[in-house]
Image 1 (cartoon, rainbow, N blue to C red):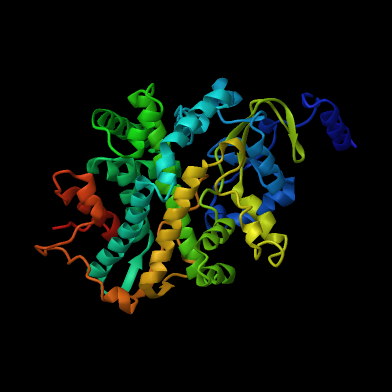
Image 2: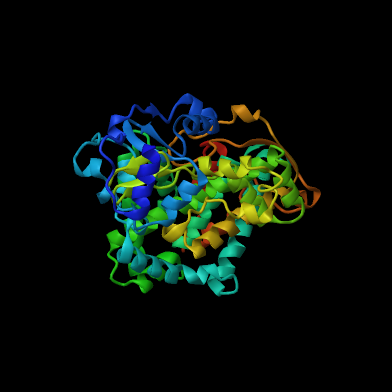
Length: 484
């Protein structure tokens, strides 16, 4: 009866306050979200919370209570209605009142004043400038767009060739460390016009920030410092890269402001896009029938969509903060409360609704929320670029490999434990190159006088001295063995 009355009040007066006596987030008992069970099988945790609380559940996130939104409809409402669900961390009541642990590791990233965490006109202005800067790379027929797409394919081919040079035309490989991560590093280096010495440094710092470990705060500061140095470098020496085009789109940006924008874009390009590559490869390798069918039919984009539906690279999207009291699910959310929209949990609604009706439908797979939704969803130019990178990276693997199979059972694959991303630490496979790939000339192994280096080296280093990026790539690919 109380629920019916509360809903009626909301319908007639959308700015009603939470009724007296309704539980607050701080008054509810919460269980920690990040447990060993969550690391192994987050889906079971989402389902248990849903059965206990309904579409919205109170959870503990590294010692801080958070509303976790579980159902697709409610997640979509939070993502789309930015007048109620704000992105700016300054709306968070617990932070404003000084009730957060001083070393809460997830706060550092949210304190970065950047487009992703702006609202209203500030957000629209910054997003417009980003669209303008990204537009040349969005168009595959423009010189910048064509060159970037060609480079992604070439980098993928070169990395597989380097793998073959090190490990042979058949053997074992980690497609996370030896393929996906260096590929995204090479793409970032090219797109951002990034000096070689900054690339390896910034990627490692971004991983530390997103994993929310004890070094997350210092890692964020170091990565921001690297991006600020890049902004200053390109202001002095502009080129045909995203950093220079962002300066053209908004000349008022300071080096620090531009560094913050580059930082968050690098996070998405490297970590989120990289996770989508690995997760898509995993769905094919583990024998997901619908994913394999779309790949065999030559529908790489559909393959990526299906994998994003089953295992989105961002399990839980950026926090939102309630602008006012509002009912969501079975609870009243107070103004200033923190809310975490769970894409991974929401996708289970689509999957469990009946695979023959939803998951096997090309239309329904595009309903995935891996790119977000609403005013803050990933911009179309960035989505298209990320989709191109993922499709190319996945397609090149299965073009070059005649055979590839996992070398670990699914339940033994190591996942990164974190509240945001869903990414593999390793993707170990046994592979055999196809006959046409074996015939391609590959870079000679270490120690050869005529070693062929990745194209990124020549483009990123005017002096064409390849040692730094080549050393970084080999550290990423081959476990830190020293390159000659």
